[in-house]
Image (cartoon, rainbow, N blue to C red; front, side, top):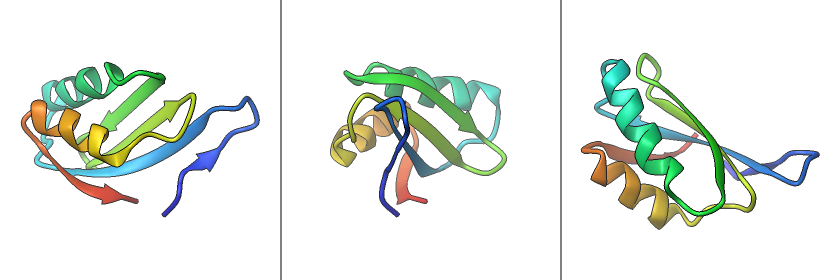
Length: 79
C-alpha cells in the first residue's frame, strides 16, 4: 500500500475513489489532483475507481483527499 518510486526519481501511487461513473468524472478528479504541486500525471479510470498519480515526491494523502473532495468524490484510500 505504499507509493512506488520509479527509476526517473518520480513516485507512482494508486488511489481508490468512489463515485466516478463516466469520462466527465475522470476529468474532474484528474483536473483537481493535477493542481497539486509536484504532480506530473494523473490517470483516472471510472470503471475501476482507480486513480494513478505520478509525482516528483510522495504526496500528502490529505492533499489528495482534498482535491478529490473538491471534484465531488470520495477518496477511499490507497490501492
